[in-house]
Length: 252
Image 1 (cartoon, one colour):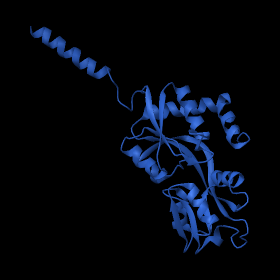
Image 2 (image 1 turned 90 degrees about the horizontal axis):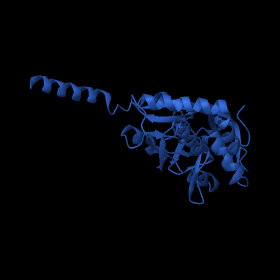
Image 3 (image 1 turned 180 degrees about the horizontal axis):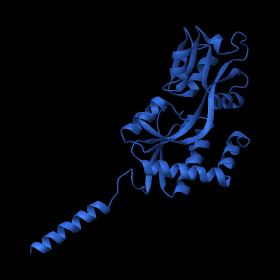
Image 4 (image 1 turned 60 degrees about the horizontal axis):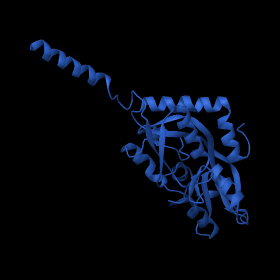
């Protein structure tokens, strides 16, 4: 009787050690991905569907890594808190890699090189670069690295932070802000497609930064799987194909 009990106990122990697996040790079958819906050309709504460079890339990564994804959207400033609380597993939304964010989330390897650009009304000749933004009202996005940059580097400037990017561009177009400072690919894309008659880009590319796929902390297997899939997509040409579709040419 005692031997049977011991054997049963050992079986339960072995099952507990070998089954299930932790989030850090094993890859799951599916994950919840969060993104934004107004950061063209990375993620935006078109004919009722979420499309863009980031959306195609994360789908290709999931296919290559062998897991399913369910994509949700939220305001940009809610993405990091959502990862911290476990509401989302993965986030892809043009998220700059910063030391501060890396303290509370994990990142994939960089997948896009970016920086900040200035957009002003087409008839504005006073603002030619970052030094001309001192004391000005600058539109940008709530919770973005550009908002932090304005506060920390541009003396006397007032950042007007908006949840939706179209509100930021509209603020410059209607005169309630002097300029917009935001991620260069988005500023350039907006001006080329929507604001060519009213806005222009001035100055240089500021604060070069990389985008990374954000992952809730403690998912080492997921980080590794995403990095391996991203590397494979770069090697087999899939990354270049997706990049060319949304930016007109392959990355240099």
